[in-house]
Every structure is written in structure tokens, then in C-alpha cells.
Length: 65
Image (cartoon, rainbow, N blue to C red; front, side):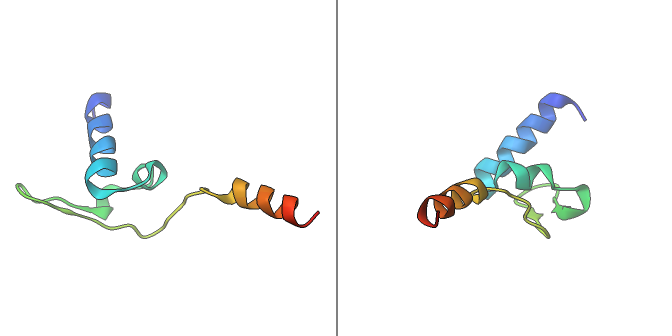
């Protein structure tokens, strides 16, 4: 697939489906049900995000020295 088309699909998933970048990166072909026209369905089986882990770790360290 052309790099430009990948970026269009990447940002479309983030914009239209409200997905996070890491969720979009982990999407595979079998996760996508895309009809010829209209809306399709994206199935997220696993959420692999590290959002908040560093902040939570720093917050705990500051609160419980």
C-alpha cells in the first residue's frame, strides 16, 4: 500500500472512529469490515496504550515518598 494512502487511513481512523494512534497502528486487515459503500466496522480486540503510566508513576512517587 502506498504510504500516502496509509496516512489517509491512519488519520481517518483517528478522526472518524475516535481511535488513539497506537490503536490504529495495531489494526490488522481481519479487524476491518469495510463494505463497498457506507460505513464499516473496526473491531478492537486489544488495547495497547501506555497513556498515563508515566504520570501515574510520578504522581505516586510524589505522594508516597
